[in-house]
Image (cartoon, rainbow, N blue to C red; front, side, top):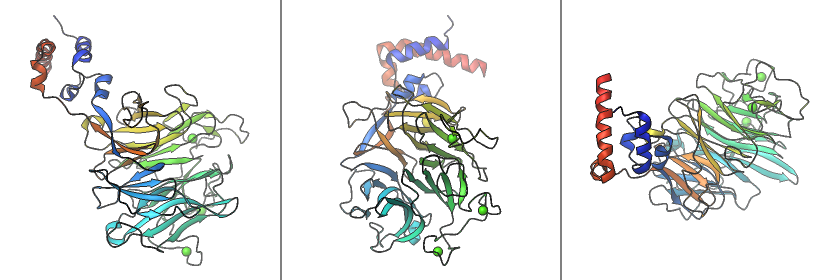
Length: 432
Ligand SMILES: [Ca+2]
Ligand SMILES: [Ca+2]
Ligand SMILES: [Ca+2]
């Protein structure tokens, strides 16, 4: 009898769904892969957590940004939340969006927050502000704030979103288009763009709202075609972006208007200047009811888009995530992302043409009866573990315990399976 791959798969699904060493031999199926992983709650009791990150040199600490203006420190092993916030802006008019640690944080204590603040009624300003951490690195020094960048009256509708340092140690800033459809195609304005700054010096000594230097390899430095701060443009609301910590490739989750949500990709080799199409394009299609002109050859399509709706592969607000580079071998290279409006959880396989996969039913949120994660943001720790901010909890993706192969082969069903396996094995050896 010839044992086909298909036969083995059928057998596999029926009884022995969690054996990762078999999946490693290439004979697992999609459903067996999913059964090996769970979301576990790391910490609870947070208030609208919307960003998670870690600091260089602080291995066991997670830093969680809350919508109300606090940054909390969590021990990733115990889930204990420091009683004193790392930063507390909750009594101000500021609304935190994200944070980033200086690559030399362990030495200089510098960290940065992206926020919006209302200085005048009805006028919202986007800012990047630098703080200095206390000596023990457990809180921010009072009065240590220094404005890095301030964009007045520029964030009413679509404000600043993600900030983060690239592999080149430059600070990247995702900023929404501020005014509906107005700034995406204008690289001379900062909104609707990814900005790239050198925060270690100041090219604008007389300007208190610009305390940074322009990296001389930014794409519009020698040209009047765009602002010197702009790295890429044509974006609507780049809420969450990330660099692949292994390859340096850059992923931008751009929240759409009324039709499409999209993930954009920029290879590590890029020298910037990409036009991601908004507001002419929404995902892979022309923006409905937009009269701003046709697609031009320089516009870069996303690697993935999806339609608005409540279906399994639909949603309303894309939450860009991370390429998984943590300890789980089978998940290497999967770019995880989510939708906030429709509470879905997905991945694109960066090793395989960005192949799509739906994880919503397989990775259940243990903190809610529906079991569906409602993700506001993803995050990574020092070891590349993937975290999700869902409702008032922080969840971590991990592998389930793997049963001992001997135990399984000892069971009644598995005895037959063991024989099949042997045959598959000897076939393989023959081929080799
Ligand atoms: Ca200055
Ligand atoms: Ca310029
Ligand atoms: Ca686009």
